[in-house]
Length: 505
Image 1 (cartoon, one colour):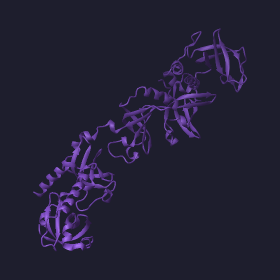
Image 2 (cartoon, helix red, strand yellow):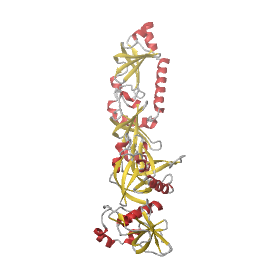
Image 3 (spheres, one colour):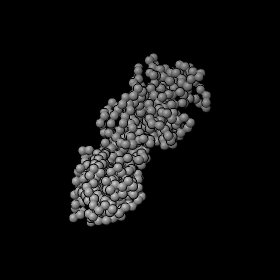
Image 4 (cartoon, one colour):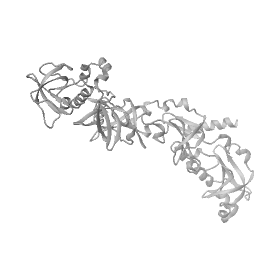
């Protein structure tokens, strides 16, 4: 696609002052850049001096009509023949002038070989042939921009300067772009960059395919993503597709003018205009889950940042694009956590240990529980069978009372024991915040269960159905936790058991 380059000079500078330049660049070269039309009749060469006859001098028009022989007509600007503001020629007079171009089959003549004349002709030819012209944005005014091109000042409406929304007109000042001439009316020239971009966009769209990777330039930032130019075609790069790492704000990840490599995800036809194109920058890079083994290792500890909270746990970013879940059941040994927000907030830095890595399911299970702080590690030493303790009642259930032995450790006093010890007043004696003297009947450290009975009982028989109901409800809760989204599962439990055994050893 041919483009005319601007010569940054005053349009009134005489040709003689550019003698050195003229020696390097012939008039034929200059004219060839403004027209590719071939003359009819006699083959007049650009720059050739000819004699022509004046056949018409319009009263209002600016061009004088001429004839060259029997087959060719020509025009010359009236101002070319003025002397001290007066026209000293009449119809029938002959003049000598130079051939500088051709328009609509007529030769265009000039008294002098100035760059001004050549540029004017080039602009008119670019308009007729719909050729792009290089121009420089000089200033912003009401409704648009002043553009200098081929020695003329043109107007570009603000809606025609770009194919994205213009938020700040000042960013265009001093920059050079290609334009299409839309209208020439005397001294008024209107140009459009959008018209040219639409033409270029059509050429680009013919080559684009879904799944193709292309280079682009960020043209505009929005709260939901970035508008990217991929060859005069604008596509949307959603915030979720900028990076595998978590991006909270588009401005923190991209800047206007930045080069980006993107993948075309979709191209949806619209009832008007260009198709809606969706892009991805992260899918044009390596997926970190394909290399998860290089960044996250089973059983290792890491420090990460909380990037998302749900009702069942918190997601922690261990490596850009690799998040692990801390289930609520893995947040504390000593406190029952109902929601993650009780302990964590977005952006918190937290130390975690990896319980499970599952690349196929794209899942990493984490724990905040440090094994050294597990209150059950020395449970049999601290609460030996038949040892006596003062406990606080934490809750009264249908199957008995839950007693707090120490922070993070509770034991069950079955309802059958309470009835035998206190009769019908057992509810009053075994409700929070009462305390009670109890003895340890059984310790099951593997399942983290302790069976207690009041010291008032000389001998505690088997707890029977009360203890069985307690075990059943505990097992149901455990299964619910394990089947919740992101639970550690059996593999995580095996790892924990292995680590606990190693720690105890």
